[in-house]
Structure formats: C-alpha cells, structure tokens
Length: 265
Image 1 (cartoon, one colour):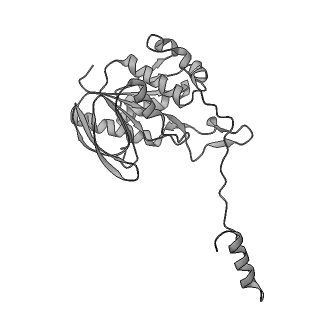
Image 2 (cartoon, rainbow, N blue to C red):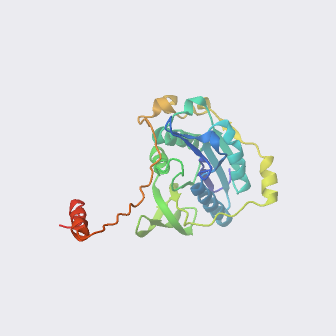
C-alpha cells in the first residue's frame, strides 16, 4: 500500500429533488429516483483528492448499499478514488446509525492501515450527522466534525477549522476522522477521460461473511440496531393567515386577539 491512505465514506442517496415520499407507509420511495453520491460526500471526496495531490498516496471509497449502488462508486472513481468497496448483504439491511457505523468501521479494520477518514457532514436523506463520529468511536481514533476549512496537511496531523456556529482552529493528530461541510471546497467535475476510465473499474464487493473475521455479524443490520423508525412524515409548512378587522370595534378586536396569542401582556 502507498504511504498515505485516505478512506472516504460515501452514501448513495436518491436524487432529493425528484424522490417521492410514500405517505401511506411513511418511508422514502428510494426506487422513485436514481441514486447519486450524497452531496456532502462529494466535498469529502474532493478534500481527499486535494490531500492526495499534496501528499501522494491512495484513496479508498467505501459504501454500504444495495448492489444497484455500483454506478455511484464508479462515479467516485471518476472523481479521484483509486479503489472502491461496496458493502452489500441482506444482513446489512435495516441498520440504524449505530449498526451502519459499526459495519463501516469493521470494513476499515479489514483494510488495515489508514491515515485519515473523511466523511460528509451528513446525508440529505437521513440528516443525522451521526455516522462519521460513531465510526471514529468504534475505531478508537480522534475526530473533528463540521470542518469548513483545511489549513495545513501533513502525514502526522491536520490543522483545520471546525464551524459549529463559531469557527474553531483545531489540530487533529493522525490517524483520525473528519466530517466536512459544503464550505470546505467546491467539488470538481470528472472529465470524459475519467468517466471512461471509471467505467472499466472493478468495484470490490464485500458481504457480512467477508467481515466476520473482524466483526460480530450480530451487530449488523436490523439485529444490531437498538433504534426503530416506526414512521416518517413530511412536515408541511404552515402558511401565514391574513385577518382583516373592519368596523368601529376593529381596534378592540385586534387587541383581544393579540392578548389571546400572548403578544400583548
């Protein structure tokens, strides 16, 4: 393996602009829109490419998803990843963030040496921002979330800005993990040559059995998930209601409404 190894975790997510929501079942209909790289993960991949351009090394993209996600990982290769691994198995299904992060961390353990893990801040379909930090906890490595700027990079440490409402300049000793916001960079588009090269790339497929030597398979998927999503729903935005008061008592009625709503003491 080359000197500096960056792992990028990628979530294939449905095109959020076109995906439909199944209101009867209370779930996102993932078959209603094509899968693409989660937008925040594009920033993670671009950050990895920029680090590779400075330090050299290798980028491995890892995703846990159904087999139909292979084109997403080929897109990751077109955008700069050297290697792509798809974790796919029915035993991974039904995973919450804890089981998902455990599965991803197990795959990273199986890889062996790594120097840096980069994740997007969150996913557009889950929006929890939990998986990245949980992966770091499973691996016992330091981590920094909401990285909006990478100031300095070396093989021993990163100097980064974490923005949680207030920007903080922080040092991360490696190996470690960061999650990045969309402010960290502007992802470049792959060239036609990159896309053609990626078409021929082989995506490695790992199942639960492939991870059994480094993990407890009972902690994968539904069986390893202590949380349950009973039902999800689309929050409808309430629109403003206009009320017009007319007549001689208009002012008195307006004051009455304002007092009832607690606006006037």
